[in-house]
Image 1 (tube, helix red, strand yellow):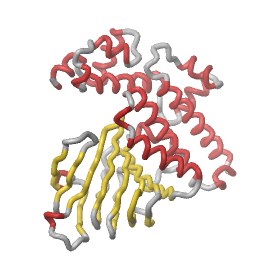
Image 2: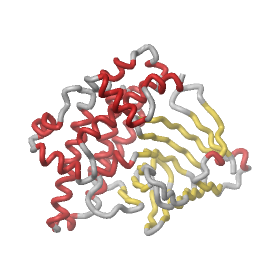
Image 3: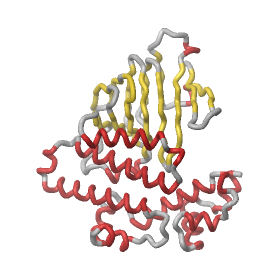
Image 4: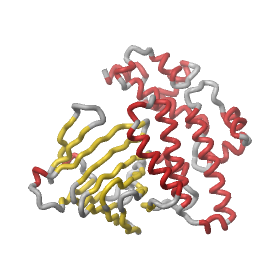
Length: 316
C-alpha cells in the first residue's frame, strides 16, 4: 500500500502516515515503482472549523465508500496539475488542470489519477456551506469546470486563502471561510443554467440565497462585536428583521444561535491553543464577542457539557 508522507505548513514537521490510517479510503497504486518508494506529499492545515490539504499523488486510484453518518463535510477540489477521472452514484466526468469540483462527503466516490496529480482540497462543514447552496435537491457532485468569471475567482480565492492561511488571525479566518462558502454557492448556482430563473418559486428561493450570502457574511465580519444584533444587521443590510429571520429559517438557522455557536467555537479554539494559556477565560469570552460572562458560561456548558476551565485543564 505504501505510505503517505505528511508535511505541515511549518518547517521541520514531517511524519510518515500509513494509508491504513485512512480506513474510509482504498488506495490502489498504478505505478510499477516499488511500494516503498510510492509516497504522497501532503501539506495541510486547519482553518477556522474547516480544513485544507494540498496533495501530490503518483498514479493512483482512490475509492471512498459512502459515509451515511450525518455531518460529513463537502470537499472542494481544485486540480492544480494532472488529470482525474471521477465516478460516483449518478455522475461521471473528467478533470484536468484548472478544473474545480465539489463533492458531497456522504456519497461514494471513485477517483483515478492515471499520471498522478496535484490537488488542493478544502473540507467544508455542512453547516457552513449548505446555507449558500441554491434551492433544490442536493447532488453527490458538482462539476464546476474552469470557465466563467465566478469559477476563476473561486479558484484564485481558494488557493490564495490556503497559501496565506498562517498569517490570518482567527476572526479573519472565520470571515474568509464564509466568503469562500459564498463563492462556492455562487459557482454552483451559476452552473444550474439560466433556465432555472424562469421558475418563479425557484427564482424566489435563489433570491433568498443571495440575501443569505449577505447576512452570513455580515455576521462573520461583525461576529466578535458585542453590539451585534439581528436588528442592527437588518438595518445595515437594508432589509427588515422579519425577512432576515425568514431567510435564515429556510435553512433552519436562528440568528442568535448561529452567532453564539460560532463565538463558542472561537472560544474553544483559544482554550485549546497553548498560545492563549496566559489569557484569562473572561478575556477569551470578551474577545470572542460575549459581553456577559454568566451567559457565556451557561451557553458553553449547554454546548460542550463541561466548563471552560475544565476544557483547558484537560488539554493541559
